Image (cartoon, rainbow, N blue to C red; front, side, top):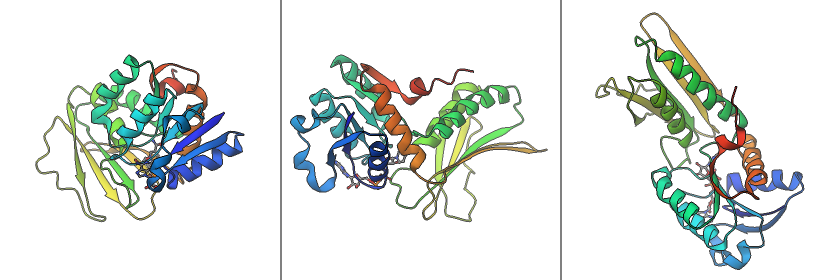
Length: 250
Ligand SMILES: NC(=O)c1ccc[n+]([C@@H]2O[C@H](COP(=O)([O-])OP(=O)(O)OC[C@H]3O[C@@H](n4cnc5c(N)ncnc54)[C@H](O)[C@@H]3O)[C@@H](O)[C@H]2O)c1
């Protein structure tokens, strides 16, 4: 398959290596400094495009992919308030987009079990629940897209929780949760050098604590998932989330 990469930063470089190992050709690499090469003509050389850039550039990059009519896999996070319009645009123009807040197989298993656990914990109102996420200090968005997906999985299944709130906490401190309401899920974010991504769901009662945790050791799992997504979506039409690709229905 021919693949175009939009964004050639930490993720773009690992995706290039994994895609090449899987015998794909990288036919275009666009980064901050060669935007003039981002043309429909160049994008059309690809069977699929993989986009890992920044929250500020993702929407216009998606539009370029739609204008070229080439399926796009979007890994960039921090733009999900625009999902409804992007979905409508994708469907109305007959295009193809697959997005994920996290492409790793392990995290998607974690999302699945998180929803099942939340459904179970709905019956035990004396447990409160919060989410913690830790990422490297260059991460631009907070909370992480992964933490938002986890919190949404809790809110969909725990009747006493209606919304999430985020607190960015300095390392070693406790979050100031004094204004937190009972119907809110606290997402506590920490930024610590070189951590690829750690997420913990904590159910806490007066008598005990249940912790459910995922720790990424490096970025390879995200990159492999993005390449698998490009392979899965390149000959499909429509708007997909990565859950439809993994389809863990057990
Ligand atoms: N979904 C996932 O599984 C997953 C995993 C890791 C990271 N991410 C997200 O992916 C994004 C990128 O992460 P990263 O660690 O590679 O960041 P990074 O900062 O290392 O790389 C981003 C790259 O995008 C380039 N860029 C900026 N504007 C651009 C534009 N208009 N067109 C093309 N390139 C442009 C920058 O020059 C930079 O090289 C972030 O939003 C991050 O949160 C998602």
